[in-house]
Length: 134
Image (cartoon, rainbow, N blue to C red; front, side):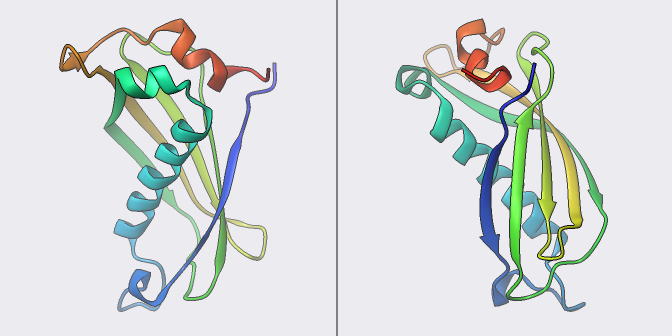
């Protein structure tokens, strides 16, 4: 089975650059959040978006190459295997203009039921659109 991949473009702006002249590590973390939310917004059923939200519980990030001001970065993300309880793994790659991976991340997210205000087991119908091509 091929996992669906969500892809979007980001541009490294002046405010993303640190004193070393490249995209700051904290910006990559912000982009991980931004891209994950965009993926959720693009794929999730509107009823699921109304009922649930996701929170990060763990990041593993490998900073492989720098990105510089003006670079267009391709962000690619997909969901790992079936969730374990309330948690789901999300993978992400940020690819520089040269086609090489700048940053690779694995982030663990927990689903929160808005009505209950607490984590719940990830419902199969919520994760299904992220695990297989329709």
